[in-house]
Length: 492
Image (cartoon, rainbow, N blue to C red; front, side, top):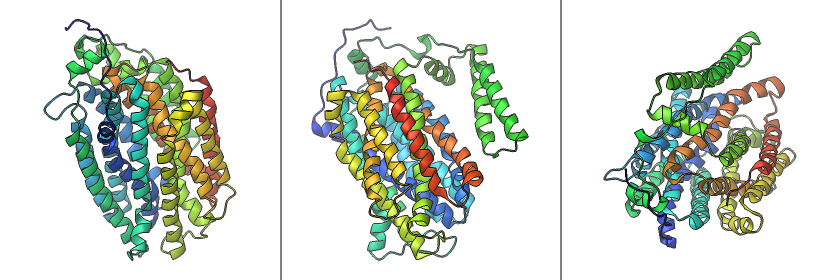
């Protein structure tokens, strides 16, 4: 094992170095925007009811829960002719491109759900290493700039992705179709997304030379520690997780709750079983490292985990239910074949494009605010602005006025994409950026799973004909996220 060297910081990146490092996220977010703004529309066009929408999104979060930490773990340990992170986001981009072509051409609801699973998994494979990539390639004092530029590309990609169906419709391509068929404007938008993600990720892969493991160890001032030499922690709470999962499964069966909750119960029990197995065998494989790293998260990461849980619960509610809310409450239609419904669905794309455009601009203003009040307080202010936005959507019935809450969502979104990672990369060990950012994404995926399994039952039970009330739930949980930031203490 190499001896410990004196730490030195990475050389600063030029503007174009930062540009090339983050450009791939333009294509990734364009694809995410197409998914977020149009998948509910596709599912409804294929015959899904509003209260079934959340469940049809479930395959993606389940896959992300498995994929992201594994990708983070292996990308930390990969080195070859194509680099460290690049093989992963290249493979993810190619698979996502195939899924973007297949999803709007699916003729069956189940096939569309399968393509959504493939798309979500592939985007996770591409996205997770990109977060770590910024940390790999930038010195400590330049990471806020790096994440700000990444946020700008995310916003720009999302604007184009969100506006694409309406833009194609303006060019004369139909935005309506017979029952069971996805409108041509949506199909062409997804084809655009397939081309964009492949080309953008390929650009970053071609233009950026990654630091080797030896170079990164030199910057860190730490020896190159072989994975098998790392001391692992083996948590002993596996039986408690199994008991919690069994209790939930029993409750679902006895109280005849929504059967989607079986997924949550089974997931808790499986997590407990993995812990027991790893501890019993004193395993040294990928799962053992992931479990160990999860148990040894820095305190700031634990504090941010709660914030992320509430934040992303609100975001997934917005992405899933804005289309049915706006089409019903503002455009007064629930008929997916009608011109009014499809006009409303196109307007949701405009709304999403608007908040992403605001996010792209705000990305360069938030570091200025953060220097005055700190990263944590800046993030808190932005999350509370997002909570206000969802509350306003409860009462606004004019399509143009809906752009005001979307501006507040854009402010929150800009902070969500950057500030937690600025805080994290200041406290995480650099050689574990990949695994810890993968683990951190648990608290993005778990809320998606919660919304997918719970919200359909909530709608059926409490407001079966009024999806507008999902925005109240979103406002409350986003407000809780903002208040939870009071517990986050930064380590400068």
